[in-house]
Image (tube, rainbow, N blue to C red):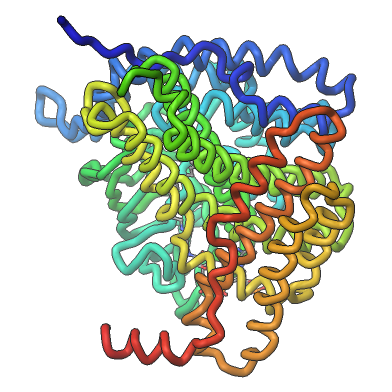
Length: 552
Ligand code: MFK
């Protein structure tokens, strides 16, 4: 008998996403939700309709055309058709604009990132330029450079596809991606403007109309304080590149439809955004935004992989029954669901705080919490995205390993999430930096208390797991304050423990609300999540550092 398998289907991501819907019911007032929901349904339908295209066109890649037929250097990047369409969709659906029009005040970021959550897995990582565009708009506004705000921000947040711009973020140089302070790009004064000279080693989405970048004004000292933040337009009015050469496109493991290039800046005309120093500090508003995008995209990638896997489990019959009826398969998918749910809730908690901050309705405590939560959320969700996507692929058996199913791409694209915008280790150290500069662990402790204090009686034991993990993290750091190397070596375990503890606490908080609304799903997710490793901290630091000495 012939044997054919039925591929997974995606019908309506919004309708299929029970967590997104229950979360929005919890956090949005009814009138706001009624206004927002139609826009989410519209984007959901679009996302589902693009699904087949994401597979059919997955081999399309951007192409660098360095020369024209007559020997002129043109350095043009031809984008994929999906990317060209994504630019139009972004503007028309207001994927950036929603955050800046602020129609729903502090809740506008929730609206915007719900759109992102639904559309992201459908358009070949177009979130990359959008994250940077959003971050650039925020950085220019924060820098209060009126001329640049008036000139560029209306384009970055435009709803008109013919008027809208995207922005790049050129930070990484050959000297290193994480250690930005050793950047070698030099800025030379040119009247009112500057000219930049140097090499940018990874510039994602190089087709953007502008970029924010860092360079060292001549005569400035070494280190990050000697760098300044610059605004660059990539082409002049005639469409010629602005002192920029595109050396080549990167040959990457994933995100292959993203045109990531190496650039030489050879006199690129630039404008200083804010002063002539402290560039790293002035670009951090952009990092806070792009890291939040990263977290939301990690959560949405997990959700999409899970939707496909769940759908397939109802279609695929093996050993006499659909996989969905097999106890072991069900447990495997439930564990993925718990991880995806934890990731979603922490990502959207960061989103809530960002929205409040921008609408100027945050308390001091919430601002301090946001400083810690943004890097923590990025690092914990990035790791989860890779693990969850890998598990979801495995749930398809061999089909998950075959390119033309479109599934392997999900894993390759997920692998960038713990890398760009700060690796897990760099962000773990950033969490320590945030603790040292802010009020220590207090904002996180208050967040854990807020989530757990009203925990449903059926979740008390689960809540205790979160409390114990937090208490352990707190005592670990308190007793090692003066042991810099020990704290640095344990920074990843510490940050992941805090991140997973907050995820569990948020799951319990949401589950408690959901139980009051006759929905038992999220209590189940919290219980499953609590059985996966939460507390990764060891008190036996010396054994680990001695072992690392021997093994390195
Ligand atoms: C799906 C989503 C798509 C996302 C789009 C991705 C495409 C984009 C591709 C890329 O561009 S990837 C490259 C991104 N690069 C990074 O994320 C850099 C990673 N490295 C770090 O984050 C380092 O921690 C950092 C460069 C910030 C270290 O720099 P320094 O200069 O050695 O750190 P320092 O001296 O501690 O900080 C300088 C100032 O910035 C200090 O301010 P003060 O001078 O007032 O003391 C810090 O407090 C401040 N600062 C640093 N990190 C901060 C921060 N402020 C707020 N938040 C932070 N996270």
